[in-house]
Amino acid sequence: MGKRVILGAVAILLVIAAAYASFYVAPEERTMGVLQRIFYFHVASAWAGMDAFLLCFIANLLYVWKRGQKYDWLGVSSAEVGLVLTTVVLITGPIWAKPAWGIYWTWDARLTSTFVLWLLYVSYLLLRTLIEEPERRALLSALFGIFAFIDVPLVFFSIRWWRTQHPAPVIMGGPGSGLDPTMNKVFLFSVLAMHVLAAFLIVERYMLEKMRSEVDILRREAEAQ
Amino acid sequence: MSLFSNTAILLGKELRTEFRSRELLTTTAVFILIVLVLFSFAINPGTEEARQFAPGLLWLAILFASSLMFQSCFLREQTNDTLSSLRLAVSDPFAIFLAKLIANTLFLLMTELLMLPFFAIFYNIPLWSKLPVLILVLFVGSLGISIAGTAISAISAQARMRELLLPLLLLPLLTPVLVVSSLVTGSLLDRDPIVQWKGIGFLAVFDLIFLTALWLFGEYLLEE
Amino acid sequence: MKNLNSVFAAYLIGWGVFFLFYISIAKRTNDLRAEVERLKNSLPRGK
Image (cartoon, each protein chain N blue to C red):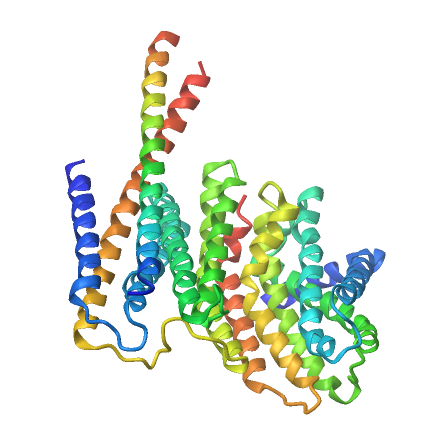
């Protein structure tokens, strides 16, 4: 219990420090001004989200192979946290786009792909609510999770190709735009902070899931009497 | 018995079952037709812009039709309780999937070919000269839809609200197919047609990746 | 500094989402703990 509190405290401290750095340490960008600072938060969330989904994929594979309940708990926890992070990406993207391009949604390749990613994992969680038996739910959602994750690179490539055929405004500069060294350090620090925050949220969600399954067993014992 | 012969026998069963009643083929074909007509009401048909939307609309219609078509894929086995006997009959459970996905691809392709004349007439698009490549694109696209559809059908058959769940799970997964197929078909049917081999190659890669995933994990989908 | 509002909005809404998620976990955890107590008390009585 103590370790969890420490992890939470470290996460909050890092997030606050990263925000401070994003505003006071990183130099102001020439063309976009202060608006560009959303980048540190937006992209760090995106990377942490992808890693959460990667963790979900690994948990799914482990469940199909070993059938340990803990892998199912890890799967749902990392999927939910990944979804929360991805939601933040989808909210901060348009907040950036409106002042920069005048419209909220520009069908930018990365943001559009992120939206499909979001839909895939919403479906994963919805599937789980529609299967009652715990082992069947764990197995089928793990299998769908595997299919969903292998689809992710295909989604990103196809949408990127689609956008090269029909160019559209790009969110926060294309891949070519290099970063000044200080900006890069602030960015990497933000990425670290987001990952620690994600780890904390995954641990908390995992513990909740573990408790839920124990309560289910207790409930069944109580009903049997 | 080898995978090939197992699959061939099961494929024969799938085809015979369907051709006895032809209900799946006819309902799917009519559905695509209805969707194409409805799309015409939603946009301004006959204009140049409508012509540009047409390839995307065709693939949207195919995707929606496939969400309905795959409902019965594994549900049929569940209602008749034939799944356990199927699994006992074959040494490799992949044969069951292979047979179903080949059958589904064939059914999908047949309905698409049936719909092509209507599509050409409604949207005023000459297809004849581009037919071979068009059929190739329809094939690689439909194969991808079938592979994913067969896998998802096995999943949704075991959950509640399966009629709504199947498209919910399938459609996001098939985004790459919709995006690339529409693009390639669009370029093909343009005034200055181009064959986008890169896109056709991508669809083939999609098919290969999902087929491999189905091969690796299929047996778990059928676990009791 | 124009656009500062947008930047603040982005950070605050982002943190808000994380915070709401954490609160929902904490609430569900507390509800479960209460149910565990209830169930544990009902079990020995049943016997």
